[in-house]
Length: 84
Length: 168
Image (cartoon, rainbow over all chains, first blue to last red; front, top):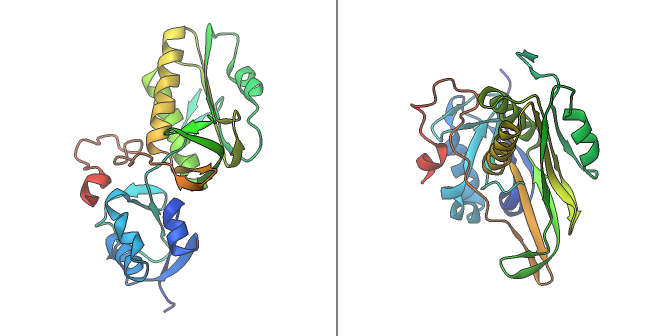
């Protein structure tokens, strides 16, 4: 049984805080997406400051924070959007 | 005219080059149209009272394209239009350059105006693109808007709570 991982993407100011745009997260299958954010917020405390305005996505769809994550999923943490 | 994969006459793109506005207008205009309405979003030289030097746009490109295609599909559902072209530029942009361009064609002008307005408003609120503003004395990510719960892929979205509300 291979290691279960999810791809995690960071954008905007979150990417600057973490220092990279992409990471491989070693996963307990079905763990909520909220727990993944908490993992990074523990290592990069400034992330937590932005938690209230961050939206999560799983496989390119906005999802709520209780959404379970499975191996191979693409997770992203999205600060408020400002295109246009 | 429609298919499960979208509307074949539409053009939905991200680019790091100058946006070819005239080409997009010609692309959406067909002989059945009585109107083409365009929105040209351009880089202004000030923000919150500070002089802007230039901007940089970053996107979650695959998801941004998905969301832009969903907007186009919704436009076709909600408004009686012919074609829509929607192109957003990424990377560094100078003052006066076009960051986003939308062109909508329709048999009648009212639908084209309404659809174009709805498309840019929805893009600014839901498409994962971020703008960083560079000033003489530093740079900031623009405040932006918190996207609501997904609506484009849900036929009955009434039960879905916005992700942003859960986050607060």
